[in-house]
Structures are given as C-alpha cells and as structure tokens.
Amino acid sequence: TPNKKYTIAVLPGDGIGTEVTPVAVEALRLAGSLEGIDFEFKEMLVGGAAYEATGVPFPEETLKASLESDAVYLGAVGITKKMPSSDHLPKHLRPEVGLMRIRRALGVYANLRPITVFPQLLEASSLKRSVTEEVDFMIIRELAGGLYYGKPRGFGINEKGEETGFCTEIYSSSEVDRVARIAFDMAMERRGKVCSVDKATILESSRLWRKRVTIMSEEYPEVDLSHMLVDTSGMELIRYPKQFDVLLTTNVFGDILSDVSAMITGGIGMLPSACIGGPGPQLFEPVHGSAPDIEGEDVANPLAAVLTAVMLLRYGLKEEAVAKRIENAIFDTLNEGFRTRDISTPGAKIVGCKKMGEEILKSL
Ligand code: NAI
Ligand code: MG
Image 1 (cartoon, rainbow, N blue to C red):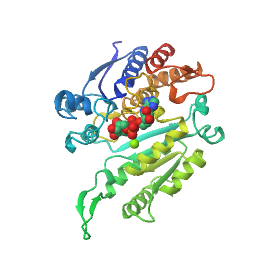
Image 2 (cartoon, rainbow, N blue to C red):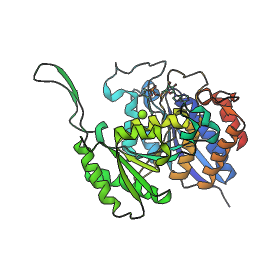
Image 3 (cartoon, rainbow, N blue to C red):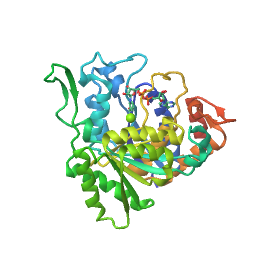
Image 4 (cartoon, helix red, strand yellow):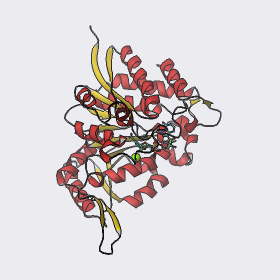
C-alpha cells in the first residue's frame, strides 16, 4: 500500500528555534518512515527571521502555507544576538507578533502543556526526588483571551499627572466554556480530576471563570472538580505536584504556572506544548523562547522540540504509533546517559544539541 502523506508547515523562527527544530523534523521524518508515513515539510519564516528577510514578522506566505498544512510546527520567536532588543521597532513589527498572529490565524484557544518527569532526570530538578517522582499532569492554559488580549489597554496620564500603564482581563462565557470542555474531556481520558486555578477572591474575570467551570462540571459527573487560588497553586505545585491531574487556567496564570512547573521536570528545555481547538491545522511549539544567551553554541536542549513533535503526532495527526516510537527513542537516549547541559545529572554524558539529536535518531 502507498504511504500515508502529511504536509507540515515548519516555522523554526529565531535563536535556538533554528537549532532545535531540525532535530524534531528529522525525528518525525525517520519515525514516520518506519510506520509508512511520508512527511512533506514546508519551511517558512516567522518572527525576527521573517522581519529581517521580508520586513514583517508574519508574512502572507507563512500564513498560507500554515493554513494549507495538516499541522504547524513552530520553534521559537524572540530576540537574538543579532537583534538583542526589538524596542526600537513599532509594536506590529516585533518578533512576538509572529506568534500572536499565527495563534490567532489558526483559531487555537487551548494550550496543552504536559508536565511529566522522566525517571532518568529526577536528579536534574532542584526539587527533591520524593516531590517530583511520578509527577504527571496536564496544564491547560486558555490562549486566545484574557489579560493578553483584553481592551482597553495602553498608556495614559492619571488625575495626578502621573504616567499610567493598563491592561484589561476580560473573559466571556463562551471563551471559558470552550477551554473548560477541553479540560473535562482530557480528564475523562486521564485520572478524572480537574483543578481550576483562578483568583476569584479579587477578580471579576475569575468569578465568571469559576462560575462557568462549575456549571460545565455538571455535564461530567465522573470528573472530580476542585478550585484553587492562583497563589496557593504556586505553592502547591512545588509542595506536592502529584496531586494534580488536569490543571485548567487562564492565559496569564497558565503562562506563569507552566514556567514554575518546568522546574519539576528539570527545566524549560523539557517542556513541549500543543495549541489546539481551532477549526483547521493545530499549532505545536516548545514552551521555551529563542534563548539568545545560549544561541549559536550548540548547547540547547532539543528534547522540548522533539517532545513537541510527539504532541503533533498524538494530538494533531492522531498517529499514536509514530508518537510512541519517538517517545521510546527519547527514553532510550536518556537511559544511555546522554544529557544536554541544562539537564545534567551525576555521571551523565554531556552532549550538544546536534549530538543529542543524532542519538535520538540512532535509538529510533
Ligand atoms: P527563553 O525561554 O528563551 O530562555 C529562558 C532561559 O532558559 C534562558 O536562560 C535559556 O538559555 C534557557 N533555555 C530556554 N530554552 C532552552 C533549551 N531548549 N535548552 C537549554 N536552555 C534553554 O526565555 P527568555 O530568555 O525570557 O526570552 C527570550 C526571547 O524569547 C524573548 O524575546 C521572548 O519574548 C521570547 N519567547 C518566545 C517564546 C515562544 O516563542 N513561544 C516563549 C518565551 C519567550
Ligand atoms: Mg512563558
């Protein structure tokens, strides 16, 4: 039988995005071929790289190729050694605009960030083994609304003549409902628990959030729903992270709590994510940014990128067999003792980004 075919739009972006993305692409190519799947990768520009080449951070061709693909893979966008700041650029030309635009163009509204701990990396975390061992939860961050998009926003002058800066957090019931549904459905496939994180004691947007999530829970009698205040959740994620199964939260709280959670897994170089919920292709990206501090040194950890490829297969293409192959290859590579610098453990073989990629391909 002829091979199955998928087209993937690949947007490496800036900084270490261009170093880790090829590792993920090669893993996809090889694992796919072993399961009778051909990938066509369409490499496109986004972020600062796109700005330098075309004058805009999100070119039309990138949009077109993304919309025509079966899934979109994005490396990272942001500042680089070459462009260490984008403050001199008007807001609509900054690299991060590329990220906001692609997320919006695809209509994705739920960001899935799995927090799982590889047993080989327990010593890589600054937290003790008894806390991190067997941690396995899923953060579901609302991605299309809230504080990062709310209007009014801007700068002004107050009645005392002082400068002000302001943003608005606004959520509508439908924005909460659609992401909450993803969380409850996810819990049904997992251990049946949703913890919704908000600041309902202070914020009206959080009061509505809590109300809608509670209403939705009535449709899911099998799911155990709890609510937690965001400050408490910061503490609980470090004290006893095993209590969490699905952690559902807003755009800004999810942004912060997923970086906190990164420290359970050994670091931000281990965290993949999937942006889902849109009508067409979904978007897959490592959680980390362009990391200008380590750019060009071949020391970036490619595992977040490769684990992102796993999510692309699992949630985007529903190709679980290929996903499992890559997951197993990562596991074997870690078992053989290979580590990048950021996840170093006692007695490990420290390798660079490229070498780590080669070892994963060998394991595949
Ligand atoms: P960052 O995630 O780029 O780096 C934070 C720290 O983690 C740095 O010390 C970096 O060296 C380290 N790190 C990140 N990824 C790593 C990896 N794979 N292996 C080893 N170490 C790694 O965040 P930062 O420095 O705050 O932001 C840099 C730029 O990236 C900014 O322009 C920011 O706006 C952008 N950014 C983009 C994101 C995206 O494309 N999704 C997400 C976060 C930041
Ligand atoms: Mg962040």
